[in-house]
Image (cartoon, rainbow over the protein chains, first blue to last red):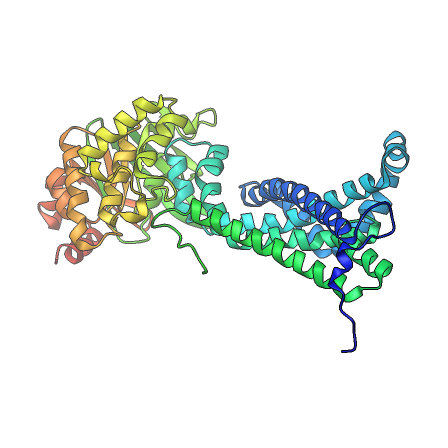
Length: 248
Length: 244
């Protein structure tokens, strides 16, 4: 390949203010993490609630959660993002609309849209994992808890969920990593997260290969770190004699 | 203590319990036996409302289960139940298994619950295992913990649903010994079991069920005495079960 690699590019000035290109990547990484973490908090909280709802002995509650999952799982993420960013604000009451479109900094309104979008999208997937985790437990566990006088909410919080979460840590880890990768859709509504900064670097400097190589390395390192973190969590909460800690 | 009155239960159009009536008096030990599918487990699960029934009533310690105003969690907290597959909570240590319901259901203090739990654990001979998890114990040990866990709630009656059926043969006796001791101390017990040795030793009455009906309900002496007085179905069952 006839290409002049120039790795020093990241330390060269961008020509905008006193920034070097590396600063752009750091800012981008900051946005990526901010999107993913807040999105994940929404996804985990809402997904857990929905997962529980799908398993309760009430057809209407379970049906509502099922409908949620079907809607959010069957529409492409990018379409959902455009709906949240372009359509939903127009459906808000007048004062909120003005606030969202005019008062907010454009980066903030894009950030809110993408966080809500990723949180709700990922919640549907977390829901399915929580549901399968609960359903994987023997029915006798619920019966035993009832027999001791527990009420349904106590059964979920003390008996079912602590076991279900332990079972689903591996698929939940995948979902946690996915939300970091999926955060890159934010670049399409103008939020300068890692991918957007990479594209901008490529266009400004013409060092396209270096820029995307660095972005790849950052995503990869970030996700490897998260995976190791989750594996440590799995080890920490492992119960002797219950579920073997998987994978080396 | 337990009064079962004309209980009928259906799964869809299939009737699993037909007109079942019996009584368990305070301090009495009643063994329920019968072939698989006869409804004995279903009947015992109706006693603490783990299984709903469509007709009839069960009154436990003056509380009607069919009455919609009954506080079922409260009733269940006073009825101990031991399951075929132990159903200890595997994510909790043995001592946590013994204390969690005392604290969260009965509102006892943690110290009080631990003291009570450990005393009962000692009684079933497993005090040394208090900090282990259920997965680290044998089946027989787990079932003894399950009995201690039920006793920690100070139940007025204990229900046993085939407590030894899932155990290796050499572990059956350690569980039966605990049950015999409990019976001799005057605990009111209703036991679904095929352990006829246990029935002979401590039962006051034996109930034999078949096809969802109570076919025999008589004192132990009568049940094991002159077999020719028993129904044909009970005779066949006894012939099979007493061969070994």
